[in-house]
Amino acid sequence: MEPEEVAALIEEGIPDATATVGQPRGVDDDDHLAAEVVSPAFEGETVLDRHEMVYDALGEHMTTDIHAVELTTKTPEEAEE
Amino acid sequence: MSFEPEPSLSPEEVQEQVDAAIEQNEVVLFMKGNELMPQCGYSKRALGLIGQYREDIATVDTLEALDSYREALEEHSGWTTIPQTFVDGEFVGGSDVLAELDEKGELEETLDA
Image (cartoon, rainbow over all chains, first blue to last red; front, side, top):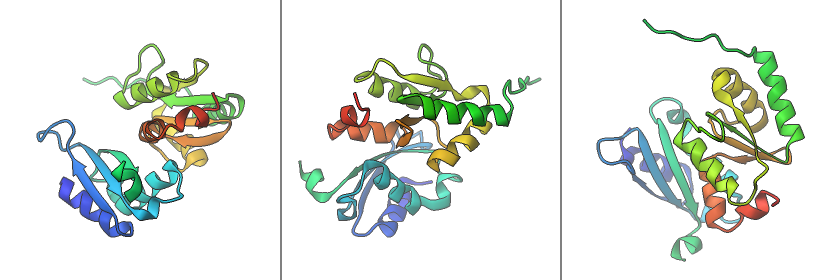
């Protein structure tokens, strides 16, 4: 799955989210993605709950056409630090 | 010709082992491989993150019967991915959650170290 499509799914699924999705192992490896997601919806949520929100947004793609995605989640305040 | 070894543990045995490991250990990491030879980058990363704060980590090698472990773990965490960390019987997460907790300075406390 293309990084842009993954980012779009996350942004659709989480309120006011901005997702930056890259390929940490290089452009030839689209099996391993890394996503940084910033959303005010993460405020007050545990890290585990934040990650589950992202996985929920990706839905069945996580078990079909996404092999692995490393997640980082931040609130807008945390992103500014 | 490919050789697929028979899983050495039955699904029931795996279920019992997972239940017991979560119940009886303060910190348990279900991983691929073992502490000396992690067989997956994510398992190795999880081990390293926990190892910064705790030396007494129990590890379970899920490669012994991967599918059975995934099923048994899902009952506890809702996740089928490996690695998975539990502290005092509570699901903490996989390597990404550990990394993010560490970045926030919350991992040591989470591990009850």
